[in-house]
Length: 99
Image (cartoon, rainbow, N blue to C red; front, side, top):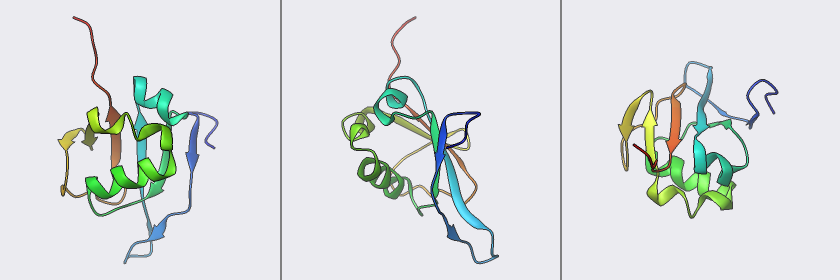
């Protein structure tokens, strides 16, 4: 666990260039509460749908929240078969209320 941000880490795969093929995932609001951590580093899946499936499998509390969340990859909205490049910052944002 990364003590600075409450993020946990897991072993990643290795990219063709020998670097670690991981992504950083940051959870916000209700997604953070469901995940039980602020964020984590995971092996980089090829697509957003692969990442969402991996998150739901690793953190069952997220399974109910993920279907209504927005996913940003490096600051841009992403979904389905959109790619998740190694080294990306992925943010999981539930719907927000307020004005």
